[in-house]
Image 1 (cartoon, one colour):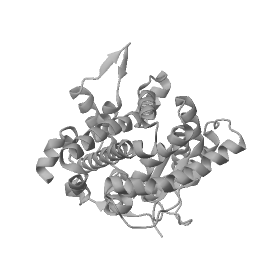
Image 2: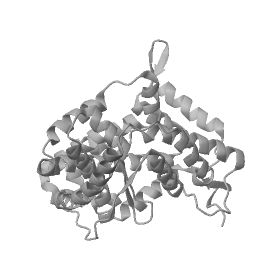
Image 3: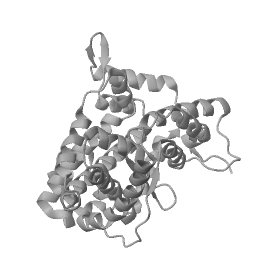
Length: 360
């Protein structure tokens, strides 16, 4: 079996998934992951059991509030620690970027190991902040809940543990319901990712030229003698070195991510009061935690990894869903899941009435 290639004007394109040593990424990430919060065996066991039960209990309320009734059995969540999550993330990223588990397909020796080590280091950093994740690319889909991080955050926020665990599960189970009720979403996402992760072998001078044009046309704010970039600026720089098809693919992913996260946030609050008595306290403290200032190095890493962009997705996406559902109700809102043409366009995320006028 050989790596998938595409022909474009005689240029071979190799999927990024074949250029990374994913096994090394998992090993390095596991070794570099931050130490997990101290907890007794009883606390760990109770958290694992309660997260598993909360994931099961969340499914029916989420289906009822969203109206996305896919009819399948309620699958079990997988409760993991940080190294387990990193290992699962490398497998998912391999699948998303066109890689393969075939032992006969080897990444480029030196660059593959370097890329694997770098990927592992990034995942190690991210692994301490992930509460849960639905992976639509692993078999029939898999819901992961990272119990050490749940323990750490509920302690930091000083909230009722049982309520917080249910609240987290409501968000992640919503993602599971979104994808299981609308199987085309995973294909739509993987199609955009395939375009983004193709290595077209473009002349470096052309990429640098586009980057220079972007910097010239979008004056960068300078503070204390150094350029300052927010998450929006990072996305702009990324777009500057991309081809037009890649820019369009990035737009599709950003819009889809904003919709999925905003929809999950909306559902958390809609379901919350019925099953999470302290939901108002949790929401207020969790939002404060998202907005708190970070040390400079951590702030830079968050920007480079797109963490702040994801926070923006939560806010903008929830505002979009709140407004549309408030105006037309959840049943009519669900027209959004029909196909790629009914997903919101970038401008419609900020102006929901435009989506209502176009689709409904």
